Image (tube, rainbow, N blue to C red):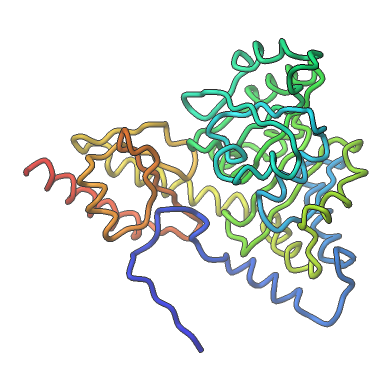
Length: 353
């Protein structure tokens, strides 16, 4: 049996670095019994679909996916034509971290919008619609938002509702990249439905992997008329898992007894603990407010280099020395306090020098 060890302490680079929640592992093991039909024709997938209807409403149709990029591309493919455009924040994951998948696979155009905090508002979109009906321009068709944003900030239900109403009034769809939707709902103290179905979102990708799953995402359609081509686009998009029960079982486990909320709430609490622990340090400030499980501090350059010798985390903005620390469901107070102690030592050493 191979055993691997890391020379690093607990990672603060990404919640993708975390392990798998024991309840999710147990669900996978439970699904590993006897034979069952492939490609979603199994009882675990039916149970997953039922669980999403309970969470998002009776009209919700859910498709298990293998990764978030695939869920975003398949979902956008349901509503985009080759001459259409997606309006999104310039920091959006579909724009910066998916290797142009939406543009390459779907042939549509992404129109990135500048934003200070990862959130776009009606005012950012309004002047982009003057090209509607002009054959010389890609046609705005979708507004895409991330919840939480790539800056760790959250849209409130009212902010999403306003975007949805504006989109629908102009014949556009509202898509949500919900990779960390659970963290937003936990932070805001509301249901995931309040941030999606009730707010007017048309379709979303749902993230499980960052919140305790082994590898499970979903496409959730909140408008029944979008459903007809989804089976075919999922297959074309290489997101149809043959042994789908093992993906579905993970998603059901997260939606059972609010495990998704407990995991996300804990991750968020650890981020707040971390931010509070360094708030009084000289030369340290927060680039964005902490509203989820991500902290974006500005640090002295030498401190960044010293800490990265012992800890995994990403530099977010090299020009301004902004880094990103991410906590997860399995980050403990002891992990955070040890990191804080080392940060404080590094900063004090730089100040004293």
